[in-house]
View 1: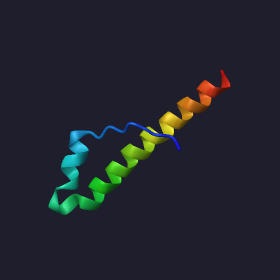
View 2: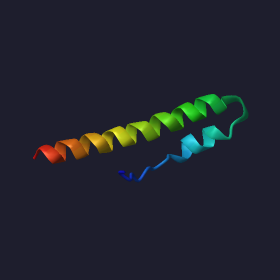
View 3: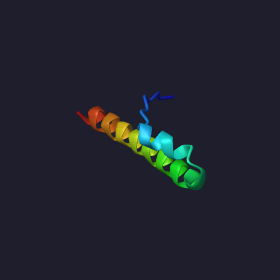
View 4: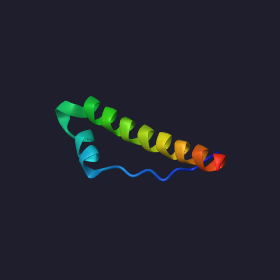
Length: 50
């Protein structure tokens, strides 16, 4: 199983604690995490080809 180091922007964390935008905050967090994982996987796959 691969391990990834994920960074979360402080603005995204701030949105998680806002009363009226929790769903939006979770969506932004999930988007950020998934994008970082996908980018890492693409990099791994491209490195394996060379």
